[in-house]
Amino acid sequence: MAFTNRIFSGIQPSGDLHLGNYLGAIRRFVPLQDTHECIYCVVDMHAITVWQDPEELRRATRELTAAYLAAGIDPKRSIIFNQSRVHQHAELAWVFNCVARIGWMNRMTQFKDKAGKNSENVSLGLLAYPSLMAADILVYKATHVPVGDDQKQHLELTRDIAAKFNNDYAASIRAEGLEPEFFPLTEPLIAGPATRIMSLRDGSKKMSKSDPSDQSRISLLDDADAISKKIKRATTDPEPLPSEVEGLKGRAEADNLVGIYAALADRTKAEVLAEYGGQGWGVFKPALADLAVAVLAPMADEMRRLLADPATIDGILAEGAERARPIAQATMKDVRRIVGFIG
Image (cartoon, rainbow, N blue to C red; front, side, top):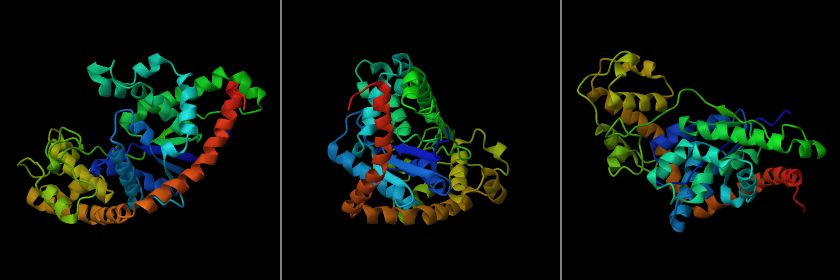
């Protein structure tokens, strides 16, 4: 069966978005609008697998939506909505809960990482998170999902669930006159090397909103002055920049700052080092600060403008849901017949 060339991707509204969120995910979504039908979701149902303050969740949902828009995702060309507005996500997730095996969920490394030694006391939702993720993707029969290294295992599980559903209900699918591959085996979409952004204070740790030091990260709402100061204060070593990428080995902070420059300039690390190799940090940091301000400050300004008008953001989410819902409804109408539901 030839499925529509459709992208689905969702990000949790965790609040306090930073440079890592932008370069690692949001920025990558923008050019896909030129080649695919794109559905971009704020996955607020995933967020409540751990307790959320309701007002904070609403604020974070709007902040992420503002970041999507400010980064260049066009709500007329793409569908932007929050997951909880389309109840078919939850409906299909329950069907998938009955298709997937507990052993599959227990093997998910992200569950192990988040649950730690407290696995008996975490929410059932955290264990079943990958089943809902599969439903997010497959309720739209998405053919591709842009993924990072930390999501590859979940996408593999999505493919396993799709294959098992297609196999378990093969006779019913045929009886309904539907194509045998009812759900597609969604493919990962990896656009170039992953951009892994590390802390500005410690190059061995990922940039994170949970870091107690605000100087460790560049917030997407930081103004030009804050962006510049944080980069100029970033931890470095005493050596000048190498001329070859090989020379960054064992120099975590240097590697991180060169990687940030490369990502913001849409260049390779090798190209950056060809220009700045042999230069000291007194030259490179101001250049990186100027670049970061040029790219990020206008986006921060636009996010603040959008967040000052929450009704407009909510309207965009509502309109996106109106466009997403018929696709999800059509899938669930078939699924309900396939599994034997009446009505």
